[in-house]
Length: 150
Image (cartoon, rainbow, N blue to C red; front, side, top):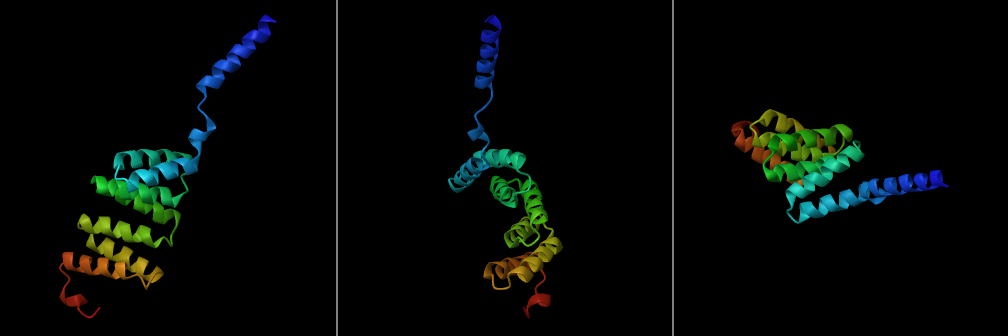
């Protein structure tokens, strides 16, 4: 009987020390991260997406959203790394190429930005935002004369 009580006590102690399974639900962290991002709570959003990236390292949306949060926090290098991961996981992810181009343009890597924008335009030729970003990148890189015919 003493042995049974000891086993019950050990099981009870373990039950209170093991976190609930709901805490590891990917949908919960995704929702919380996106909500924090929308509300401007960027550090909180990054924290949620960090956990989500550990739970599922194949979800390109996780890295994309975390990249947006990092970009808005001023972590341009971290944002570029996350956008790069997103496009590596999904090679036809137009928004990933677009946002990575924006980070590259911001750091003066205009040729890389233009390559990413060309990939994105090839994937979605009807997206006016891509052409606008490409025009801004040409302007920032001072490539005026060579791009007038676009």
